Amino acid sequence: MKYKNSLAFAQQLDKEDQLAYLRNQFYIPKDKNGNDWLYFTGNSLGLQPKSTKEYINQELEDWANLGVEGHFEAKNPWLHYHEYLTDKMAKIVGAKPVEVVVMNTLTTNLHLLMVSFYRPTKSKYKIVIESDAFPSDRYAVQSQLKFHGFSEDDVIEWKPRKGSALLNIDDLEKIVENQGDEIALLLIGGVNYYTGQYLDLKRIAEIGHSKDCVVGIDLAHGAGNIQPNLHDSGVDFAAWCTYKYLNSGPGSLAGLFVHEKHAKNKDLPRFAGWWNHNKSTRFNMRMPFDVMEGAEGWQLSNPPILSMAAIKASLDLFDEIGMDALREKSEKLTGYFEFLIDEIGAEDIKIITPKNPKERGCQLSIQVKNTDKSLHQKLTEKNIITDWREPDVIRCAPTPMYNSFEDVYKMVSILKGIL
View 1 (cartoon, rainbow, N blue to C red):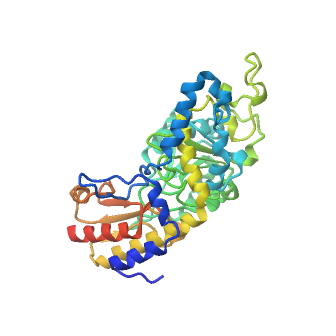
View 2: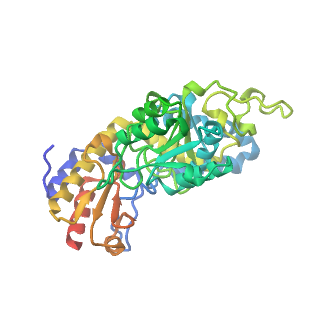
């Protein structure tokens, strides 16, 4: 669509936005004078839905009134609580319910998945990651290599080409073609945390599987942001957190995906606990271990209900709206944001996130040359909450659930004034 650089135009877009009402269902942080912050860090911590308190209070009341009987008698019996999240989470990531479970935290889930899917041999043991992968992913794969008796140097990095911040998937294909006989696992961030680039998961899976490599995806910056279509992509496994775009609260539980093709393979090695034991005999405490089928077979312990209640509050909102509508608004928001940044017309500012909306989510990474973190601090002083990444990038994520076109207009106007 044709955009205009004016407050009136931004306000008109908000009037036409069928999802604008969602903003009132979130708490927007305010400054000391009661004015809303311009909040652009849903890629780091999503805002709190106003319904979250009600959902958590329900479980607190049931705990107070029922004690241990809440496992069976609560309004939402705790024994099955994780199951209330499965179908809605599966829709968000494009999976079948049998392929998804909510449990643990992101890096814990990656390690548990690598117990099963990183099975190195003397000749096939290397792991491929992006050169600028999120540090936790790098630490995880390095520690897995060392645990199995290999070296940290056995990580293969998929790097951007010289002069570019973005990854080229043809380069990954060359890596696997040339070194695939030595590669056991590809563990790739589906949306890069630094650039916001959304990668072609289906092609990554095809490239990895062409040389019998396992393919895993970190969707920390993807779940609730883009539509990864995990089942159709063919990747073997994935994991993601829920406190970013899924608005579940700081440090909340994570999600896990294991493709249906592995669902009934009970011979896959894995760590065990009573919550991945067969539901029908779980409470017969003297039974030998009998692992469950599907993603639930990677659980270990009974779930923390209060964290799951916060996730349930958010997933109910997502289920009401649907990812199609959220993605449509997201593309308009980032399109307008990109237009306004380009309108600044300064040579030392550019967006390093892909221009193609199909290759990015709602995060735009803005590179400002010849500056430092003081720019970010000046934005913060103006009540604009963004995310600074060294050496010269501001990460901004206008989130379709609660950010407005007016937010975007005001943010860029203030940024231009500071520059």
